[in-house]
Length: 255
Image (cartoon, rainbow, N blue to C red; front, side, top):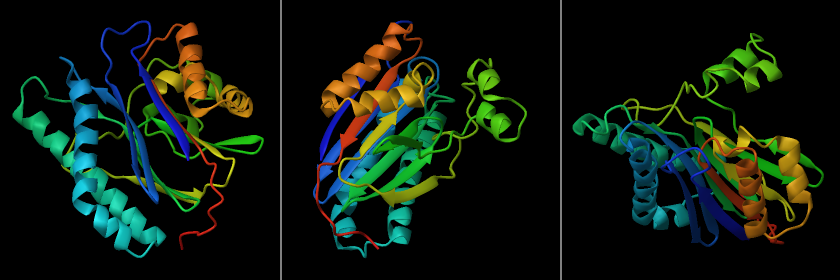
């Protein structure tokens, strides 16, 4: 597995409220991105707290992860519990601190192991997978505009420029409980995963990401190229990208 994470403030923001996670606990590789929101730099606190909580959860439950039956249901439950605990910690901090009141964050978190991926997702950060000559958006945006697009109230061009395109319908920290989407699939040799915040996706399209992936660059070079493209187009938001390239021949598939 080759991977690289990169985050950038962008051209128009003074602070970076994004965060990313890269952890290696063979045979498990854990990756994530988060995009915080809230005044007084509380967004930065929320995204950082999300991954602090996830790291602590993994530290306490790593042996259980290694020993559990590798079923889709078990991975779904594990990721749900991990994200739910992060949500509760952010919600508690938001309630207890006047400066952090109303803060929240997106999170897109993946566990990659034995040629399979397991993803938990809340918000409008995204996970893409490039397989051969195609790219797939694995996650579904939890945003007002995404819902309007799905309901036929907007077309793609209207959605791209809608003034409420950054309004989320789901985020960590906005309540004591959060609904988590779960995705599972195979991750083949030669495939590329891209975890990213909307600072990338608001300026760089899927087909452009695919073209960068097809150039055969190393994970770090690919991440730098994508961040650079977003900045060249004005960098209106913080930009975070984690690129994961599967170079493994491991055929031991999870059940």
